[in-house]
Length: 271
Ligand code: DGL
Image 1 (cartoon, rainbow, N blue to C red):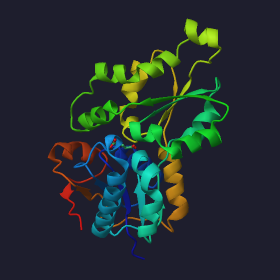
Image 2 (cartoon, rainbow, N blue to C red):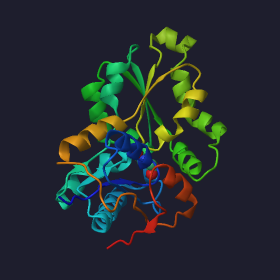
Image 3 (cartoon, rainbow, N blue to C red):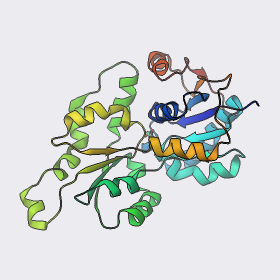
Image 4 (spheres, helix red, strand yellow):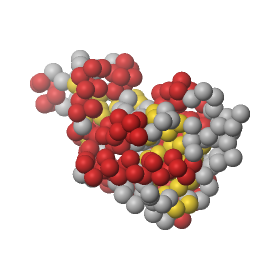
């Protein structure tokens, strides 16, 4: 039986954190990667224009890869355009949303952090997840868009700027340590952080190193991999395994892509 690969889509290299979870769960399956690096970062874009763009890029990537499943490995895109994508496509579409539910289940102090893009932090979809699954938790939301470019830099072979990261993460670190103000207000300290942007798991060693106290870091990789197993009939190797498409030149990423099993990027032409 011939079967299309699993197509993983993100604005940039963040989807590689999801690719890594998928490859661990399904080592014999075929994977293609597509990213809209011409429009990166998605987290700072206008919603209406972005919603249209995501559909156009995903349709072009599906035409190029002929996948059996599309994984939208981007919280910013999924919380905006998942329904629209499902309407346009006849293959299963698996989205990525912040892992609020597992984080709430894990937190002992009942104070969790949500680290995501500005767009994801403010979306009604995110608010619904919080109300549904973390109603009894304090949730500190941190828009950490500078971390997206640090993850991109790391994949292109540069070290992340830890001073810049530390500044973006300051609200989390404050919430993770008891202070006079929190003690007066009776606010519990934060013990668990949702990595609500697929770029951020790529920076986990630096996040853990910069944190003033040990924290639980929760991402969506394993949940997405399990979901792909439920919606795909069978995951088997494909002749397209390892193909990668980008909307802007990405030669600086070739070595990084190879570490995740992907070939140098080919240009993706939009229809
Ligand atoms: N990786 C994307 C996410 O999960 C967003 C990065 C961006 O702002 O483009 O939200």
